[in-house]
Image 1: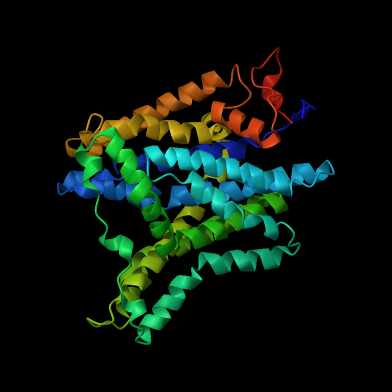
Image 2: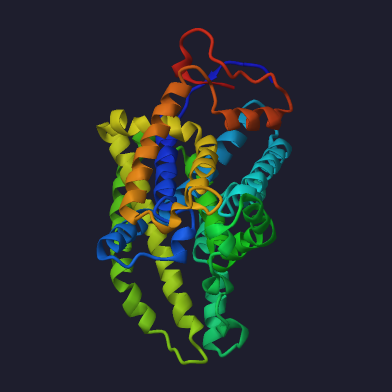
Length: 404
């Protein structure tokens, strides 16, 4: 491969990705890396903290990462095309490597999303050949509306027995081994039960459909130059932010009244419940758009010096995402410190804020000397099947770009 020059980075996109990573981590911490659900908070203050974090970031940070994944897909494919290279096969191999990392990470933490991103990334490949942006947007909207959930709602209202069965992940409980078991038992549970549960949740909750739709939106934003030419989208960002904020407020206020309009009986309860879940997911999408457009607007409106502090974290999202669970799963799980039973929501939030600040410092110091995060470098070397990938910076001028 070799070092063939420098490619300017989209620092705003890096900062947005770092913001998404922050949001995901700040959800994981009060969630105690999933163990919160074994004993939810009852104290009003703890509940208020939990609900505030969930309102702002739960479902939204994940959506931001999915959107960023689509943008990155476009950038990779487009840069290869500009060099006259068809990167399709190598990108598929890149996803295989990501899935392998996800499988390994899943042994440690069942909530791993790397494997899910890798599998769903395969569906992006054929859409790269769709030239019509309108068609691409229509397909993205189709998946964001979660057609399978709409079908289930309609079938449930028609009296179909299968459609009125509760979703299986709703009745799931936290495995006892996570709470007080040893490390070997935790890994065994992650393999036997955790892996399947993750995919069950992603499917039944509609997140697979949502992830594909968001990745397609990200690919479309990359195609039109939304992040490469931010000055061309000032008005569009402002109008989009107003629309997204209006939709988010409307969905937040109208979700319960609209849900109650759906007929329900003891034998036909699922359509109403699923309607509530669907409206909640649409609120998450609208709120994610508010976060994204607001963040980009502030960044390019003079806030780049402050928000740009997140960019190094965005450049090593893979490394930091894995590192977060490597450090904090043992803090909460039974085989480690077992603090799931004693740490409050306020304490978890404060610890999360301090820990992410430390991650930012680490990322800034790291990129003074290295081109890539360690897992990012390993992923790139594996993609090209060569160790000849620049890693340690030599000389000056490193901040101008990245080795191609």
